[in-house]
Length: 410
Image 1 (cartoon, rainbow, N blue to C red):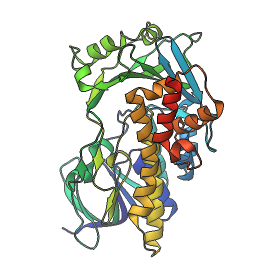
Image 2 (image 1 turned 90 degrees about the horizontal axis):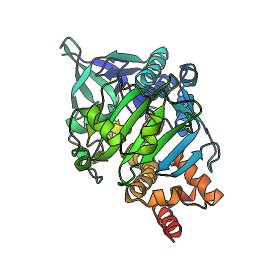
Image 3 (image 1 turned 180 degrees about the horizontal axis):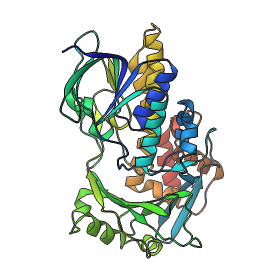
Image 4 (image 1 turned 45 degrees about the vertical axis):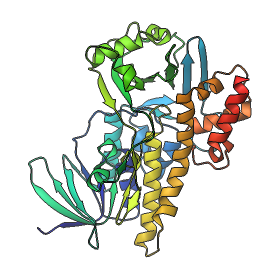
């Protein structure tokens, strides 16, 4: 079988893959994207962070996103019983974008994929990668189309942006257990019918803490069309207590949070609920001979701070910068130039996720007296600026969060 040839083969046309394709097309590279699904298709991860706008703009896709009419977002709100606090991302420590969007991912991902195609990246939907050989001079991938026809593609480099499908980690046996407990999420979309005069701010994601279980939380992500994404996240043992189908279980758990129940009292539950379990992932390495892993294909932490798409975009930016140098004949140290810089921000988010599930972060954000400068530093992290080394809560995230928790507890 004579293989096709391309400069870069990208596995997956989601946010990481499409933005990477945009960057590569700006470099003049031939790009082939193989996507297992047919777009538009449902996905979660719907509340973007302002930092992500930098990469959308740099990839030449900003106008496409702006004109799509998504819900404007300027911050994040947190609720726990009668406690409430909100972070306005326009008041943050780090420089850069301060606003973004909350998006239906089916539409958003298609907008990005269409933008990549407009930039002359070739995208093949319903084409699945089934094998990869990295032993030769160049990686060789075997793929299968919707009709079952198999073919091979030889590329100078392969980027895996397959998300939760984690194609190359599976095929190359790179997966390692995550150190996070096995958590699950049950979620749906509703016509929310939340009154305009309510305290609900549609320009912010709302994260609510379960009144009795601080490690159980709910997301409410408003869209621009009068609908919301609603979900609950908890360890699997907690979710397993509830009987019935996913919708029955989701509504039973939501009923335990009075504030959210009141907001959604007139909601129309018109979309079947879904569940994902054990989404946290890790790998032995984010790169290897002729390939690199982008976004969720490499590592996924937790949805609590909506970091997934931002990490995906950051990985696409770093990897394509490395490829630009490599194709120019420079020697690239993929560990030092790609993996380490990417993990710097991921580890910052990890420190915040750990603090959230340990309950310390709640003590901090719901504390009655806030220091404005520290609040702006935390706001910057929540806005996605987890790579800003000038921010003390990036450079020393775990230690500073621990000290702050002690002060708030005292």
